Amino acid sequence: MTAATEIMEQSEKFIRWLSGRGAQVLQPTNQWELVRFKSGDKTAVIYTNKVGRVRFTGDSESAWKAFKTGGAWRATPATARKTRRAPEVATLLARDGPLCFFCLAPMDDDMTIEHLVARTHGGPNHISNKFLAHRGCNERAGHLSAPEKIRIHVGAAKQRATY
Image (cartoon, rainbow, N blue to C red; front, top):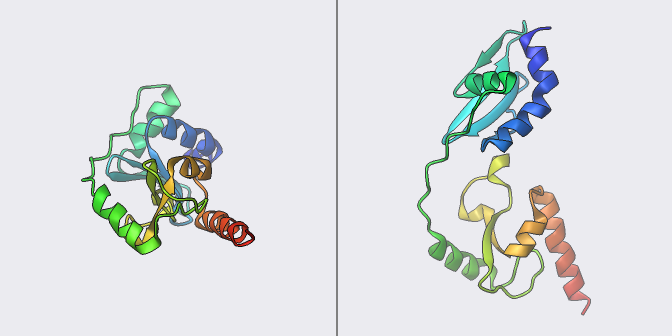
C-alpha cells in the first residue's frame, strides 16, 4: 500500500483526530491535496503527485506521524486577534438594524457576530461577510453553509410577513 493510499483511507479518522487536537481542518484547494489544516496561523498540507509520492508541508508530517504512532501532538494556538467588537457591532446595527439575522427578533445583550461564509470554508473576516445573531440562534445554525443560513433567514421573513 502506498503512503498516499494509506492517508486517503485514514483521512476521515485523521481529520477527526486533528480537530480533536485543536487544528482547523480546511477544504483541499486542488486534486493533489489529501488533507489541509491550520495549526496556529500556518497552513499545513499533505499532498501527492501524479505518481503517488506524498509531500508534507508545515506541521503536517509531525501530525501524521503522531496520529500513526499514537504520539502526542497539539495544534499551535492561533495568534490572538485584536478585538474590534464594539465598532463592528455598531456598524452591523447601522447596516442591518437591531434584529437577529436568523429569527428576526430584536437583539438583546446576548448577540454574536456571525460569518455568512464560515472562515473555515474560506470566508473573509470582513464586515461584508458578517451579521448579528442571538447566541442561541447562532449555536443552532452551527456550521451551516451560506445558502442554508440564508434559507433560515428567508423562512423567518416569510413567517413574519404572514402575521
